[in-house]
Length: 112
Length: 112
Image (cartoon, rainbow over all chains, first blue to last red; front, side):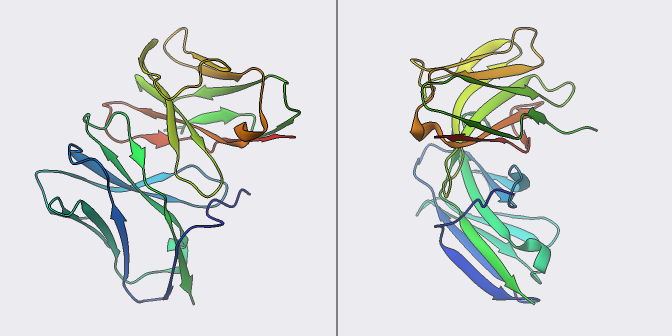
């Protein structure tokens, strides 16, 4: 399959550790943010989203933190597993989820 | 429910040739998106449809790219003539509300 992230920043973690992936967004008017996971040869898969009226949202093993002051978004993955290995993209929107702008992506590699 | 379907999965053409990609969104999803993903980058929105009307096509290179969604369901994206820099994965996504987008597996285009 297609290799998505040949030249992307890479985060390498040990299985069972927590992972933190960071993203700086560009538009101060953005009010909706999403994290996507993309495995090789597949389309992006929704992980978690957050609106600008919140600063934290939790899902199953994942937490998204939003700092609007410095336009920073982070994704925390608890107890990282080999199946979490993929490229992770943040995306922002200023129009209720329409017209998403994706960031450059981070490759997460989980060592067994 | 069935996911977003795309065909073909892979296509190799020579520059100056034409090519078309097909997308079938998830049933009931009114909004359909086409993205271009160049290797190592995040997806870039090309065009967004709401039913069979265009919501945004500001990043579509209209001199060579065209897209249609005649009956508000399936969509085709065409490139004519193709250039080397069009080599990328073309992703189709759909959504019901405009928030969470579901992506298809993509069509990998190689222009030689």
